[in-house]
Image: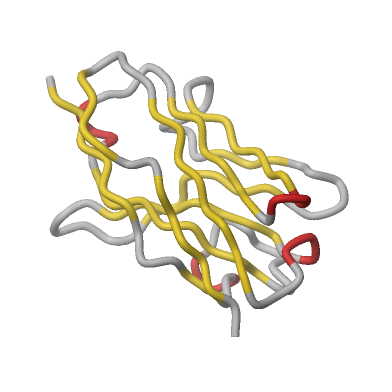
Length: 124
């Protein structure tokens, strides 16, 4: 059983920055595709960013391109999400996820393990 724990959320004013971290235990981190998703009240869970194993190719939702950066440190079993130029519409609970054999990394169904989430609130 793989466990994922997010940290780094908080309250920030519009235009500010935050860095989220997600640390994995109970599995082989370097073998997973890692992703970040978010969910606002009354809305469905949506894709934010993903990073593959091996090639380290990255993928981003159109709404965050140019502002967010995903990265991973396999030695620390950790994936990061650097968020810059934050907007009020970025407010949500952010979840990290791991996929053993994900082919469509933007789809929630590709992921096998999920963290419990961390709250990000951006004030106007």
